[in-house]
Amino acid sequence: MLRTTNRKFVSNSFYVILISLVSNPIVAQQNVVPISPNIGVTFNRMASDPRVQQALRLIEQTEPETVREQFRITEIPAPPFKEDTRAAYYLKQMQDRGLSDAYIDSEGNAIGVRKGVGDGPTLLIAAHLDTVFPESTNTTVELRGGRYFAPGIGDDSRGLASILSVISALEESGIETTGDIMFAGNVGEEGKGDLRGVKAIFRDHPHIDGFVSVDGTRLRRITNGGTGSRRFEFHFKGPGGHSFGAFGIASAVHAMGRAISKIAEIETPRFPRTTFTVGTVEGGISVNSIAADATFALDMRSNDREQLARLEAQAKKLALDAVNEENIRWGNGETITVEFNLIGDRPVGITAIDNAIVQAAALAFDQLNIDLQQLSTSSTDANVPMALGIPAITIAGGGTGGGAHSPGEWFIPLDSHLGPQTALLITLSLVGVAGVSTPLLPERAK
Image 1 (cartoon, rainbow, N blue to C red):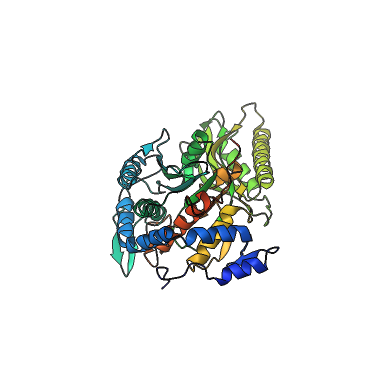
Image 2 (image 1 turned 60 degrees about the horizontal axis):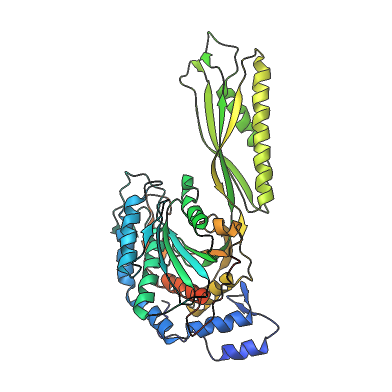
């Protein structure tokens, strides 16, 4: 069991190390993130403040209630594009914890701002409201065999509850920050939501200087890379007709089959990792009809913009070739066409390892004695600011769990207080504690 209440945040020898390595960075977490000495000193000054230590203790002491709050959130269904009820509940929780001016924006995000004393950066910290599950899903939390089960209990009810814990700790400890902290429960992270919530926030608030996404459980990595994706529906259209009486005309389903076969043979690089899949197919009206319509959905992903663009161009060309072959095969003037309808666009992005937001996160892991196993690349809300050149990372909300995106999703509150504690330390280091530490997050040119 990890404990932080009585742990000294940074030993005196830390300063000795910094002095002796002025020209060489120290290394945090088993060489995962090299730390710049000046960032380490500033972070330590913040973490050593008595009010910050008090806030960390408050988070640990109130973690049982945070877990109960997590369960309450879980039991409010929030399927894609139907997050309204959960958003309204979350708004009320933000307001009750001191963000009296919190509101629901035009996209459905619940947003509250804790103002700093001025002349500092603005940090957005958010967790997503939506789940992957349809409206009819039973989300009642059940305890079985030492695990709590419910769809969405970790992804992302845990992140939402962790952020509420941070808000409460800040208010109760009376910490004033230099910069502003924008808290959000955002919509549209999952599936066809296409990151619409975070896209709207950055569209409406171009002054945001940095972003921390809190998503899921198992606090063991910092996600500083964004896997991009492009998702299309390839829609094939033709004249259609009776399977016997109209035999000899081109078929939308046959053209679709030719296209899928060609796309299946695409070879993609292992590095940068680039993938594709035809996830769904539909078409035709009956077994004895030549199909007039057919559609498949194609998901393409890559950690590299150019590779993703190349894959998209290749897939579209192969579909056009398939249509041409189908039309030539029958050659009677009744032709098939294909349309490419974009249904998902998640941009590729990365936050450099030497960026203050990555280093602050690594230092927070160090201070709480959490084993930082790796930096990772994934598809999260952080993709959006990364692609805009805004420093962003994703961390987990704490505890342990599994089965995300399945009816058997589960959670155990094992050292789960470490999630909101980590979020608190990252947040305070980036926006600065008034009169104690300068903000590590630079302000972008306005």
